[in-house]
Image 1 (cartoon, rainbow, N blue to C red):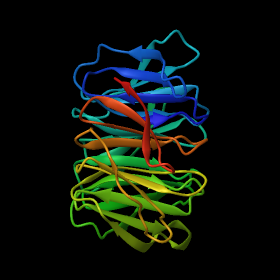
Image 2 (cartoon, helix red, strand yellow; image 1 turned 90 degrees about the vertical axis):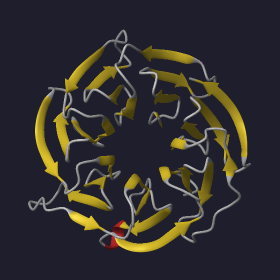
Image 3 (spheres, rainbow, N blue to C red; image 1 turned 60 degrees about the vertical axis):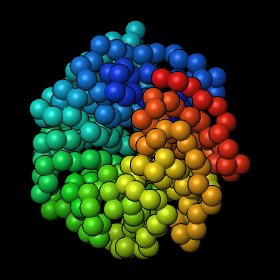
Image 4 (cartoon, rainbow, N blue to C red; image 1 turned 30 degrees about the vertical axis):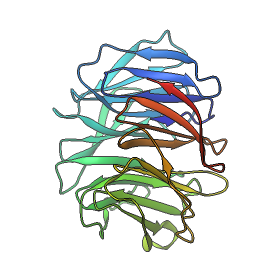
Length: 289
């Protein structure tokens, strides 16, 4: 699940094999894609907001345009297993995909061709994120975070270690200064991108695996969602957190801040998408998928 760059649309998908686009203010469904085989594990908006993509359980990546009648084009089939994460580069036609296959695949989504494969030492890549300036590509694979510098000739990745179990989620702050990582060890680790991704601090409050992370724009807050069914809002600079937002998701599997406000969307195992106002720490509106 993710908001579009203008904050007006919310893109969601799930185990029912359907992709849905909602108007975030009215909660009105404006478009859907169905007919997929098995769950859809990942969705992403391109930076301009006119193009979106999703990765399916059958290993395919499909791209669609808001300006079209709603038809989708199959871009690639990078692996035989699920495509667990997608990310569009901030500029150009590059899209990264990762999942069950032991690497990160880079595609020209406009021309539908493979550009490169970035190898990791783990067979499963759970999450992929580009830094806001497009310089860095981060991938969560195994117990480490892998970082490739797109501006350097040497494509040897930087490896960030410290998690005791698999890393499941990543998030860059909107200014690119911080990278957050979290996973099955219930820990959230903050890395300083301005200092070579030096470890800054660890945040601990969840009782179990942390499946989702996202930063807000202004003020800079970090939201986390976990298998304990709670959402926590953190001050990433101090490590302080407020009272947990209790959900009915069972497991919070996705969260996304609206880039133009402090509205936060969450989704989970109950099939619901919930919109929150974290500053007031209450549930605002709910739309059922």
